[in-house]
Length: 397
Image (cartoon, rainbow, N blue to C red; front, side, top):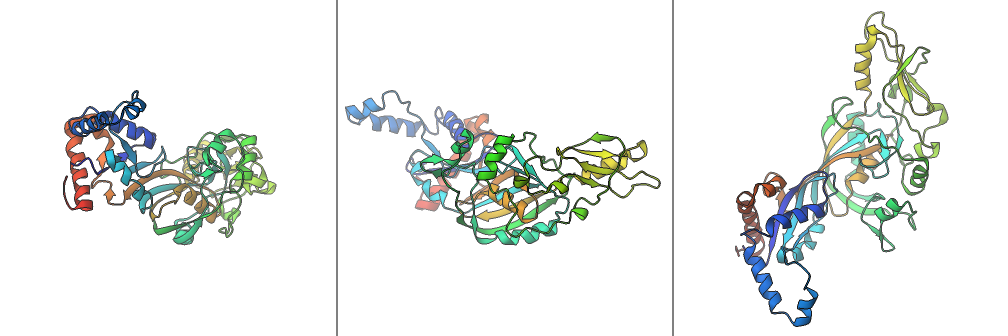
């Protein structure tokens, strides 16, 4: 293994940052036998430096240098390319390569971050959404397209990252511009009807002030070519019922009409299903002015039926597979796709399955191997490093 070019990949787990993965890698690599020759060579090189250069390094610990070739959001998992030692100088080339992702989009809600980690800004009808409608909408996102990055992103504007403006509650100096990106492939891997999956909207809702800021900064309005919505058929039924109600879960918007795109007349939707058994009382799924939804006219005879209906009226989701170019934001795709089908959408899961020559399940180190000790991870890392050197230099160092 040569210290001149060291590149490998690791399967980043959920809920930790890419930077934390690098720190964990350093913690494992620093005391290892595998990287001891590299660290010894680095110490020898530093000892030959001039005095003023050594003084600058006086308080810096000598450790394995590591960097990554394209960050992953904390909620994302999958391929994270890692450069070690002088291999960090070759990482720039990976930032522009194509990447393959599997992502789950959950319909019916919009958040400030375009994913399930954000605060809910609005909710929209979703029961009209079918697999066929999503399939049709995906055609608009294939090939060369223009995409607007999310506000919560690392892009800079006037020297400051966009997410810093968002966290501070400050308005950005100007509108975020659309950027050209390319989708080489985009398909539905799995359609997930409401009630058939574990994905849920965030519980945390944005306050009025946050929604006002979002209205100015984020694209929460209707899409330019929205899918038609038939509210009577979308929620299956609309009828008034005067009986007692039991609170279930919330479906409609609670923010200003300008943000949600729902007229005051549509804010109270009463949905009456066909009875599930002979003689059963019809029920209504009601959404009041405060966005509270409930079942009415529920009796012992219809409890089972109403529970089944409630499951059917949970939001659907879709697992997508895509290969995209550099600069593509999967969160923006989920947001835009929700609008394209006449609703809202947020990213619920994200897995990077491939980047350049590294692919999950083929030549990517599992994160848990780091904790199992050098006897487990070292042979795998060495094999990856040697394999990469063979491909790029035609030899093993």
